[in-house]
Image (cartoon, rainbow, N blue to C red; front, side):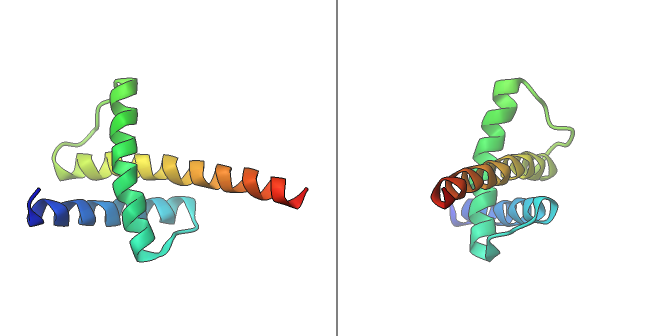
Length: 91
């Protein structure tokens, strides 16, 4: 991996994480949104492949779209886990 490809991953992660946080709400700050976007891109890629979906865009826009969808799914999953675990502590 070159420094340029790492920079692209960070930028894609930042954009996807920020967009997901804006849509779903409750962001994790700059570093958290980057991590959310990068992990979301892997999750989105897996999800798209598993379901046989194709992106409506090509190039970097398609990559950001898949990462955005993955980041939204990941953010909702984190929210669900957090609500389930906080409900157990309150009981």
